[in-house]
Length: 235
Image (cartoon, rainbow, N blue to C red; front, side, top):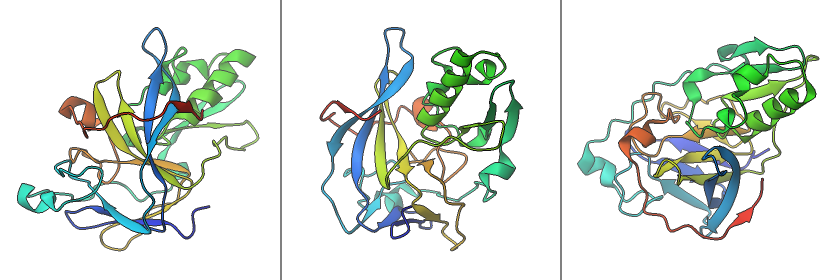
């Protein structure tokens, strides 16, 4: 799952991507109530054998780095934990399913609240609530939430190795880099982060949990200047 593709965090600089990782716009789709309910795939960027992606938010060539982090005096100090998800997340036990929650990796995409809040739904003893907990957890780009069966088996969406440039029209901002499909991530000092099926990396430069997104792009009003592409729905 993504063994030949990797991302390396550089000191106060960009993310270095190796392995011709596909990159596309991924837009949060909302319903008539403004709730996040699906993803829409847009523009696919040209394939490259490797590239450097902006992490400071200052590049004039987003999503790619143009060296602006130097003039901006960007402080990209990593503060995120290297703990495994199973160790860092809490378990919310329900009668039909368990909801795992690692609160510090939230990208504020809001899928978890669309149909009655997953952390409350998990406590309800009916089939519909169980289904919603699984659905909302799988839509979470950061992997904060994971639905786990009572026998311990975990639900995960099937994601090929790729990077999504998150766009959030409801909030009026651009969001993080959505790293999918088990692409390995290495810290600036060479320490690997646990490989996961889905994580979100900060690209506004404001996260307090670097390199991961903590939702700061919304308060910062981050805008990558993207023009939305096609409207094919993959989820």
